[in-house]
Length: 284
Image (cartoon, rainbow, N blue to C red; front, side, top):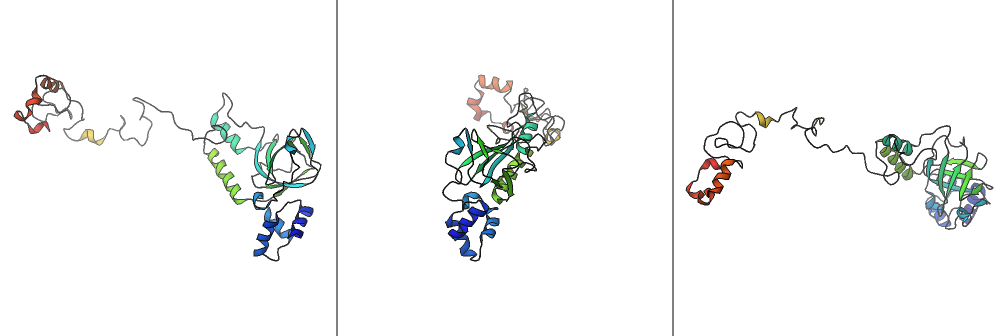
């Protein structure tokens, strides 16, 4: 086990824990360092990394430093620093949100990455557009940062000479990234970062509320079928003694079902206090 770990470290610059190697070799006893290296490129670095950080202690806090050894790191996040994270004032919010989330690749692109060795994270940035990256890398991909890479103000400065894209694909991280990108392409707005609630239509109050609603069957342009039910009319508040409050067709009787003037006058003279003496089925 120790021999495989040492070979992975010396030949491929990958720090792998002995517990991980033991667990894998139990299922595949004939596993060698080369096969294991190809396997771990498609796994989350947190699953196989050694408990000791592969990066020098506190290197991200130094204003100027140099990596003493080559190291394999995993991309945690990536974005084009030339694209705004949040919508600018006076710009189209939807367009800016999709641009920031989708991260369009241009000839003037400057990548800003967050890398991890499985224990600690460190940011990295390219000073010029590198041919190593064909576009925005997906979280989970592995990079080989060669010995001698400069670290300035906590950032690893990426150049053509000190970085190699190893590839690799972590299924869960890629799935999360694609779902995240899909949300942005569907028009979800930014709120407190790249996550947020979807864009909603403004509330319309008044006579124009249903004008452009294709699913509304009660708009003024599409009268409800109840309005045309012979002789019944609208169920309104009647204001006459011969109107029961359900339209303009007379129903017979002398009482209004709505809160009409007739009701108010009866209430004033105590009509409902002696209702048992003036019972009329039409009241109901």
